[in-house]
Image 1 (cartoon, helix red, strand yellow):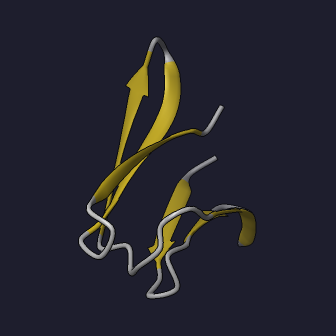
Image 2 (cartoon, one colour):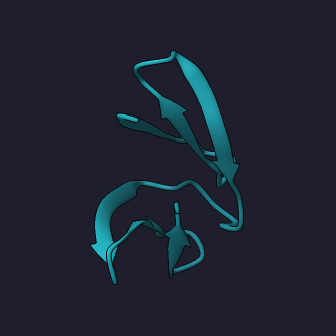
Length: 64
């Protein structure tokens, strides 16, 4: 899967499968707009890190 990420002012991040053209998941938890997404591997598993300047949090999402 080649993933795409869309951030939103509602505090969510949508994860899409770019090859299939489908939405795979919606990540929620921030209380304000998400303005950054980074993707990395932790212990061999894909993770997304998101941040919001409204609630001053960084969230780590296990995408595996």
